[in-house]
Length: 186
Image (cartoon, rainbow, N blue to C red; front, top):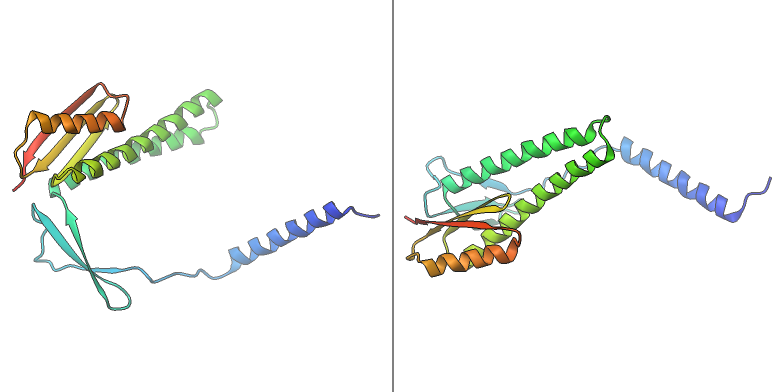
C-alpha cells in the first residue's frame, strides 16, 4: 500500500508533536529565580504622600521605585478588584455548566468581557488623570455611572472637574453620569 506524500508529511508532523508533548510533560520543571526581592523595614510605613521601595535584584544592584498613592485608595482598589474577581468566578462557573443554552453562555462571556474592559478603562483613566497633575486618582465605573475621586494639593474648581469629566466621556463613551470628588492631599 502506497501512501501519498501529504499523508506521510502529516503523520511525521503528528508524531513529532506527540514526541515533543511527551518530552515536555515528563521533563523536570525549569524554575527561574530571576525575580527581584523586596526589602522592607518594619518601621517603614506607607504614608499619605509617597513611599519609596528599594528592590534588590539577583545581581546585587538596587532599584528604587516611587509608589504614589494613598492606603485608603489602594484598599478601595483591592476591594473593587476582589468583587470583580468573584463575579468573574461566578461567570466562569456559569460557562462551565453543561445545562446552559448557547445564548446564555454567550451572555455570560459578554459579561466577563465587559468586566475586563471596564477594569482596563478605569486603569487608563486613572493614568490619564494623574498625568493632568493630580497626586492620586480612583475611578469606579458601574454601568453608566462613573465616580472619580481625585486627591490633589492644588485648588479644585468647576473648570478642573469639567476637564476630568470630558476626559472620562472621551474614554468611556456610554456614560450618562460622571461624578468628580476632590480630596485634599496631605
